[in-house]
Length: 263
Picture 1 (tube, rainbow, N blue to C red):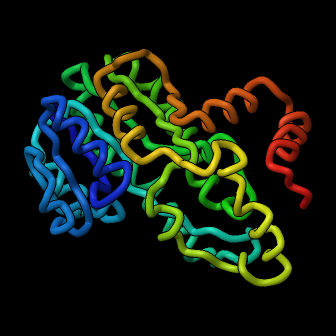
Picture 2 (cartoon, helix red, strand yellow):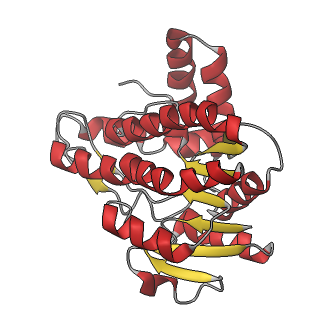
């Protein structure tokens, strides 16, 4: 299969490119700065800024016929809702949501015409369960989840599979590279300190590496199982199972107890 992946500079995108190439697939790895892809052993490397209509059109034309699309590019702006500048929120949505939508609109018509293809949208556990200080990031992933669910219903008729990948806490530079606003200052600094150990409370001190997400995405591309949503990591499986089984009040009580959150 020929697979186009967005956001391959680091993290999930890079690991997915490596995993799929090792499995014998033709990988088209893309990034805003293509020089970051120099060491990847893949079929093709392209410049791609998913925020730009022109860049998307050019990259899709260069990529040729694509059997699978992996929408991975994304970033996060962290902080309390009242503190994160809306200009930054709009910029984040431009990548996390509209960037994926641009890629889908550019590639899905050809998949539909030949009645085959796979579209994998990389969401997050935060796309199903909103966390404090990550409200806008969660909102961008909630939006991607809604888009994916509708896309599944629209394109399944034409033989196109849609998959949503939902990683939990994973050891990457993603959180360290996030833009942060207002969480280190009063009154939200107390919440920031209380929330800082939430990942350890769920999964212990050792978080899994990004390769588990790369494997999950590769399995999804190959159709190892038929499912719309794929939680990745023990924490994602635990939290999303609880979210499915409990009402809002019971879920909040369970999470507060598990995380020892007094806020």
